[in-house]
Amino acid sequence: MVSPPPLAESTTDVCTPVRRDPMPAAQAALLAARLKAIAEPTRLRLLSLVAAHDGQEACVCDLTGPVDLSQPTVSHHLKILVAAGLLTRTKRGSWAFYALVPGALEGLADVLRSSVAGSPS
Image (cartoon, rainbow, N blue to C red; front, side, top):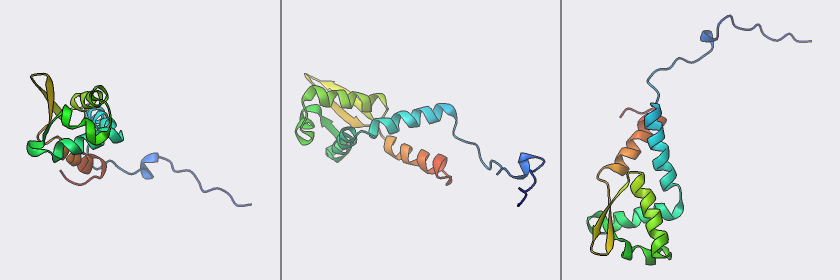
């Protein structure tokens, strides 16, 4: 019978040291909310549609057809993207216009690169 190897005296001998600060809890919560918002296919498509419009701004009336959903359903999805800090909403007359928050997508990509992948920011 083979004996198991002796246990180390201290776990510090076998644990890997932390080389940089981990993501703070508040930043993790914000990132998780944004990722949750874009994890739904319709919302990801709506974000892409807004980004594809001139000036990266679109009226809700221009977004219902491409996703084949009713205006209230599209508005619900857009509201979630606004709450996640990815879009802004401006009311003009009876229509709402949505625009990308400048730098929001780039910021999301930067956080993923630096905090998850470990590359420098």
